[in-house]
Length: 125
Image 1: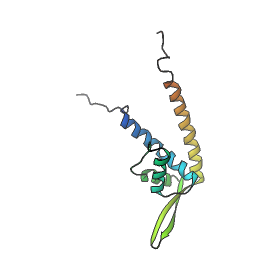
Image 2: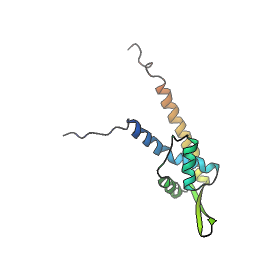
Image 3: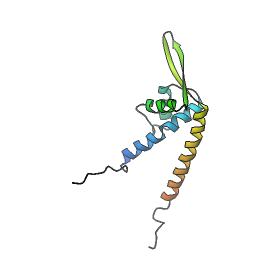
Image 4: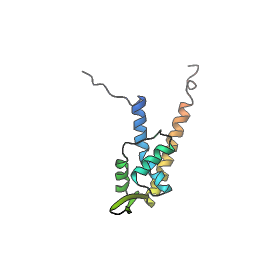
């Protein structure tokens, strides 16, 4: 009995996979602009992308980036007995952002070049 293999080509699962791949880059991009707390980062991602990107939780990205020394945190008291954790990008995070932006642009440029050749590659064969 053969087992069905799930494809990633379904629109919703494709979008979710792509969004997950871009999560760390988007977080780093925003933290390069200014220090923010997690809820604020999430709101800004949604606002700037006009709702195209939305995340149920950014904590998996935050934890990975923090463990990789790409971001650091600072607690700030916002009210008596209330603190908020702000994150900021580190030097290592800035370098990582440059590298992943370059790779992102390289891959999307190549994919766009290929997709723009639709119905043109093998004409006449």
